[in-house]
Amino acid sequence: MGITHYSWDQYRRVVAGISGAHLSWDMNRRVIAGLIEPETAAWVAIKIAEGSSPTDAEKAALDAQIKAIKYGSGLTIANVVCNLSRVNGTAFVTNPTFTATGLPANDLRPFVGFKLSFAAAGKTLVGFGKAAGTGETYTDLIGGTDPALRNGNFALWTGDNPNVWNLLGTEDGNTYITEDSGKAHIVTTNYATIGIFQSLATPSTLNKCSFNIVSLVGVDSQMILGQDNGMNSPIASYYVGDSGVKTNYFVSTHSTVGVKRGSNLNVTLDDFVLQQVLAPSTTGLTVVSALGGSTYNWTSDDGIAPNSASFALTITRD
Image 1 (spheres, rainbow, N blue to C red):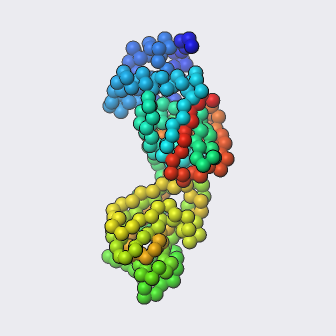
Image 2: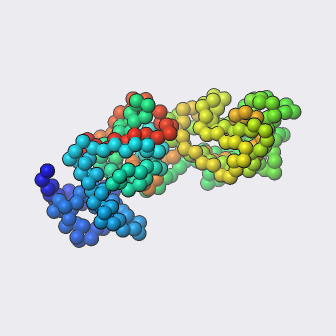
Image 3: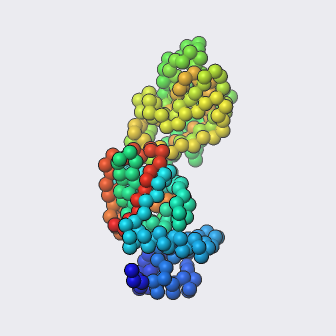
């Protein structure tokens, strides 16, 4: 394989797509001479701008992997944990977590301009990395910037039920919801259905949900964060002793999101927040449907389960 030489304009366009940082003259010279790939140099520029300096070994290892993508058959990273937005107009990958030989951990930014193929359970989602993320942004649906939005802070009650929220199940002496010092106290001691929900999510969007478990006690007590009718599609489960702020990301399959009992339940909740995620984290990528394109959508999706625990990610030139 011969050395590939890059014109200054080719290099400038690659770096401009991923970073506003400036490289040293030596790094510029090395890229133009074909001694290091521009994608590697662009990632180095990012890290320097962030206040860290990759070692020569780290640069060489990444450069070898970039060359495998550009001039070989590509590479595959197993067990990538991330969140995917599949909505036309806001396609992106956020919060990547992975380790792989020769690659910076948990960082997709070296792969701007490459084809990304996510796979899980025999299904794939394919697109092209467009640009590095600049930090997640959100649309608040419940709580958030204004904790009182749609009574996310459980400050407003009518009788024993929180305003705005819908009740799942029927209350009686053993199964009920009540106010506890401006918080929601949800109880069942006989395994009867009980929960609260709102129907605000847009199907197929990526959402972030957080809440504060003040206490979760009792015999055989379990709380489910769920979606769909009756919250029958679990997002996460919590058990006796769990406490503090819990955060979950999920692609919505239904407008309904809420909490309910998983077995018995005795939980006190506060500060429920539901947000639609609009942009990726700083180590994530925006995605377009064609190489160099401007349509923020995926090239193909044959029905991948977007809430899979992890994905295999194959990265190729095109």
